[in-house]
Length: 296
Length: 251
View 1 (tube, each protein chain N blue to C red):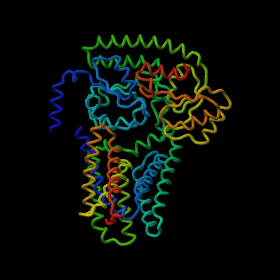
View 2 (view 1 turned 90 degrees about the vertical axis):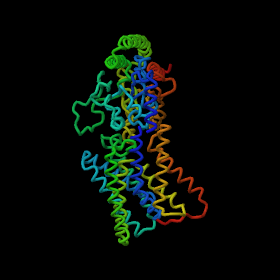
View 3 (view 1 turned 180 degrees about the vertical axis):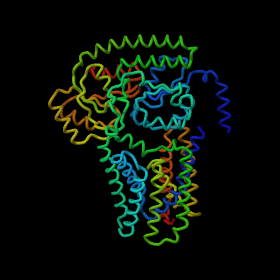
View 4 (view 1 turned 90 degrees about the horizontal axis):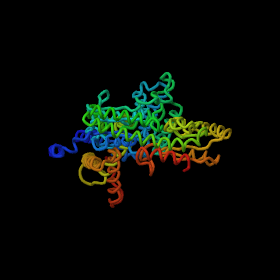
């Protein structure tokens, strides 16, 4: 009881803090974009750490506290959070960010998703019926997300509309400038063939016309079988593979084995803001991805 | 926030209540890993339901597998000295079976983990009350029949009630939290000379859980793992510090 009184006192005593729009994002990359647009008018917390496997996030008590305070929850969507967010939302029980309320923003609705199954039948299982959820690793998609976030901030905080528009315009301009630099750097990789461990970078590869031969894992969370590795080895022997792209959270023994056997460089690729040193912020994330794949 | 922590604490107490009894008993019988083996067989049942029946009859099938495992262990413990080796193998069998099945299933590991590994932060209060009622019924059955039953029937009664408990507890709290609550308070209680071990286990377990949940909130640690950590740590310290030879093993 004492704690509740104290908390109530603190809340009323610190109106400056309470006035900012409280935003929770599931992943750090969303927080980074949101901070660029909301800046001084918002307070943004990302639940997951960038170095974690985005599919399975270990929940902590503070997650629920943050969700309870939130005015807006921004999620990646396309089922990337399906394994960990729903029970947290249930426990937080915050009507402002409940499913169907205007305080919940699902970014996957604003982009074109890849690998959407034509028919969701039980035969193909229920993995990612919405398509591949790692769409944000295509740099061209980032402005679409920024626009969606700006629109939502204006909807919830109309008095800041001008401020959000100005920040958004500045962000888009800076992004487009970087994009031309990145496009130039990536041009030399056009048409090469790569293998990746998990289907993390599909959107990025498609954007820069890099061919994906196969993935090392067959199903998420299951180590590749010997048969699959043997089939991969046969494929690799038959054509020139330039890189094996490995994420930072899955075991890399299988990729390492293939890399050594065929003398192909294995590159550890960041998948989110904060996943590797040097990838702090949305610009730095793409900077780092491109630096690693182009050996700059 | 308080309500979330209270429900986690309530759950830890409900789990502690009946599992302290089982914990004392499995330490006395020297079959510590029975709960892991039974829990893993329940998981195998869940995987079979996912793979062959697209997830229908999941709970009955996993309960059937855990009961089967419990009964087999009961029979083996009657006639073999190497029960612990048998139990260990059963665990390995269940674990490998789950992986083999899921490697061919498009539901994959994610769906499976979602089903099996709960976190004590998320259990709705309704589930906790249901479990409390189930454990109370099992407790009464044990209290009434355990003293009258003899020989293999006594063992079967023990393993059937234990299997039902494990299946529900693993679903609520995960296999690691269950293991810690089962063994740690019981082990500490057995090193105390005064009082009744079961009552001591309850008191000790309650204090450790209260402390763990407070720490998990204060330092923002994952709640389930914090409960496991401090229960195990307390039991390790007490066991190392108790000098007087072998500990009394009496439930």
